[in-house]
Amino acid sequence: MSILVTGGAGFIGSHVIQALQSLGHSVVNIDEVNDYYYPEYKRENLALLDKHPFYEIDFCDAAAVDEVFSQHQFDCIVHLGARAGIRPSLVQPDLYTKVNVFGTTVLLNAAIKYHVPQFIFGSSSSVYGNTTPLPFNELAAVHDPVSPYAATKLAAEQIARSYHEQYGLATTILRFFTVYGERGRPDMAPYLFTEAVLTGQSIKKFGDGSSSRDYTYIADIVAGIVAAVQRPFPFEIINLGNHQAVSLNEFISTLEQITGKTAQLEQLPPQSGDVDHTLADITKAQKLLGYKPITSLSVGLERFVDWYYKERL
Ligand SMILES: NC(=O)c1ccc[n+]([C@@H]2O[C@H](COP(=O)([O-])OP(=O)(O)OC[C@H]3O[C@@H](n4cnc5c(N)ncnc54)[C@H](O)[C@@H]3O)[C@@H](O)[C@H]2O)c1
Image 1: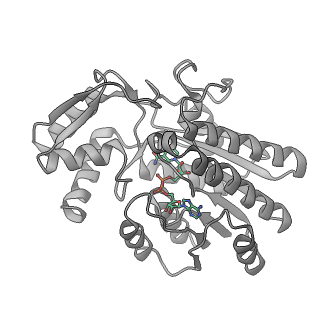
Image 2 (image 1 turned 45 degrees about the horizontal axis):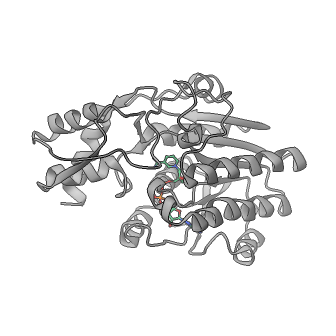
């Protein structure tokens, strides 16, 4: 297949491109390599990929996107490019809206104009907010996003839904749950905590440690995304999580066991914009995609810590 991946210089996108390339698909990559975090990390990600057409453009630039689509006939778009931080979205909600909502619409417009049959959108567990009962099920009515980031993901999901209704675009929305692993985002807790423990700095611990996350290892997420590429549906929303709730306290003690170091904690109040708990109901992913996450937090975190020792220390 010929597949457009957006955000392919980023954490999840670069892993997805590697997986698609290893299966023999031809991949085109759009990523503006912005400085949300170190662009040199993104360039390192790009350097690991097999040679492929790479367009260093902003996907909000409709003319530039049109130029890419005029040169390739895609069978599928995997839209992973985004402003992806929850807390920064409180500071720059306008930027988040532009990139995550308008930018997604630009890609949807191109998909229709160039008759691309399939669209996959990387959404987030954050759309479930604080009012959805656990475990989060795709049938839950979601209307209480806690952060602008979550609101932009929800808005983009709904715009994609409307394009399916109007134009019949086969669309799969994948809601990812806290993804971690090698090349992980340096603004996320698994990275920040590992960095702090290994360099003798204190971990900023927000709240009493009872908040919990469904941490999902990158290879499991990638397997779910690849399965979604291979199994188009008219329109589906599907959770990709690990189906294991891990409290912040448990996460820190797992990290201490793996590194053999004691974490120094800086106790801070809970963070605005964060949800209290996430936990994916993955029944639908198992049924529709054959999705089966196989990596426990201790195994995945050990791999991440090994990678961190090699690549970041
Ligand atoms: N990592 C997670 O835990 C997680 C959880 C839920 C959802 N997601 C979603 O998964 C997707 C990938 O996340 P990630 O963790 O790999 O983030 P990332 O920041 O590593 O990757 C996103 C990439 O998109 C690119 N990008 C951003 N704006 C762009 C624009 N206007 N034009 C072109 N490129 C642009 C960035 O340069 C970056 O390389 C995002 O949509 C994110 O919202 C991630």
